[in-house]
Length: 148
Image 1 (cartoon, rainbow, N blue to C red):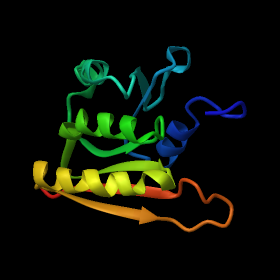
Image 2: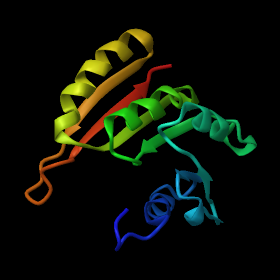
Image 3: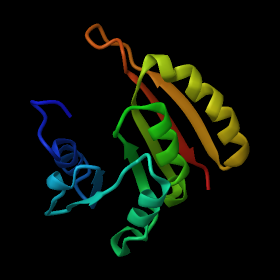
């Protein structure tokens, strides 16, 4: 997050953007977890399948999600681990988005997507590279849509 980061800032932003939604977040730092109007955060280590599944077993997280935005560790192995242990929570016609993919990981994502296309035939995968004059290192998103 960095020294100037504010815990939960993106969750508050999503709450403003999605005015009629419940917003759930997760973080490995237990000290910054919180619950407020329409926002609740949970402990999760996105590199640990057991911890991810424990989080998803929480009573409040049983319904499928319309949108899952993964904006965590920004490391390929963590993105893949969280995706593979969370994609079952995406509801019909839902979107799963991995933010801030590092440029040096784009080829790795293209390769794993080929495997995922076979494993998850009901999903579509789109890599979006967003041009920026200021940030040239991690302006790529993976957008996954559940066609069911």
